[in-house]
Amino acid sequence: SDVLELVGIEKSYHTGKPNQINVLSGADLKITRGEVVALVAPSGAGKSTLLHIAGLLDSANGGVVRIAGQDVAGLSERRRTGIRRAEVGFVYQFHHLLPEFSALENIVLPQLVNGTSQGAAEARGLALLESVGLAARAGHRPAELSGGEQQRVAFCRALANAPKLLLADEPTGNLDPETAEVVFEALMTLARDEGLSAVIATHNPELAARMDRIVRLENGRLV
Ligand code: ADP
Ligand code: ADP
Image (tube, rainbow, N blue to C red):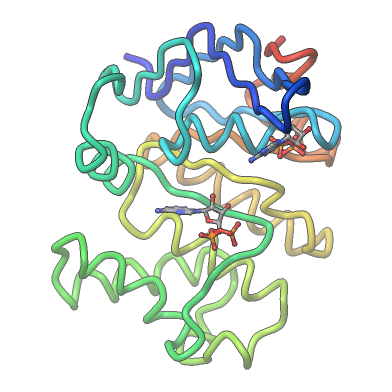
């Protein structure tokens, strides 16, 4: 079945009395297992809004959100948080790594919270770091890493608990082309080997063209 299904999503913001911005107006999206989809839109079109709704960080004003076949409408905040933690990984342009912990610890911690053993968590953390060329940086704290290296650690952290769905906002935006390629290849490998699905907002047309599908956000709808 579909990992993510959005049907007729409506979202508007009220900014003062006469002003209502309709950001999403009937947005539909289906993502199947192992599918990697590029989300392309001009700045301000509503990409972040869409990703936040898909990742249960924000609620729509209308429409249906299903994650792994489950309609999230009417679920308690606690259940939504549970689904988000278990099924969804996020990568942001501005990561929030914990500064007092090493790269590896930043990837291990969410796994410990999720009930994984220390040994298994470290093994997965190291494998993820290795997949993005950072095995030698495992013991370094964020401040000791370059911005691009921190971004790659954030990517690994998002995948720490083997989510079914990765939602990423310009994950390779501040990486040099070679490093962006390494991260992209790591993502495609996870899609192939673990059935990871992903929605990747990107401004890089070349990268978008290599994903399984491109969806454009135009006038509040996905085409
Ligand atoms: P994108 O990620 O594509 O740049 P966003 O989803 O961040 O777009 O924003 C889409 C539109 O909604 C923009 O016009 C933005 O100003 C507006 N917007 C986003 N968040 C809010 C908010 N909390 N309150 C009011 N307007 C918002
Ligand atoms: P901000 O700095 O924008 O006020 P936060 O620091 O709380 O917001 O969050 C930074 C980013 O993390 C935002 O894009 C926000 O949507 C996202 N975020 C907030 N809460 C969570 C959560 N529980 N899980 C994953 N991402 C979250």
